[in-house]
Image: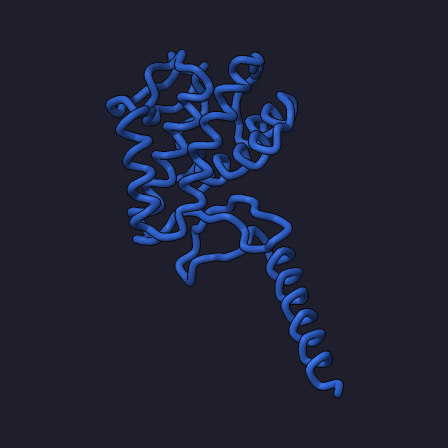
Length: 189
């Protein structure tokens, strides 16, 4: 089933963030309800019906997308995105889902494409646009050892390393404590 919301959501960053949020719930194996909750958050119209087979295919798509998030640099991300787009995307087409939404671009197989095809191709398209706009990796995985959550780079400044300020703070405090523990151990005769 294809989305009736524009392929890029209300914006390219929204579609990329939707990809990060779906990867976050799909890969640890959260259930159908968590996936539906994310789709609702991004405006997917009701009813949202995800079968067990859809869920398995969405998880496979999330594994492929996680490799884009893990790329680390623009060149590697571009290579991974190009590979996924070449193997999965179809020619761009405009759709309004029979007049139920505004016109928007899809690169999946059709308005009735499987959830995984829509998720993978729309996510790759959004991440590719971000990469082209910023000339930098469009996304990453949180550098905090206890996290690893995917995030999207949308700002103009330096590339992010953490999914949130909380993870950055926790990591900085842990490094500081580790340095303090190392310093006090070496100072004791």
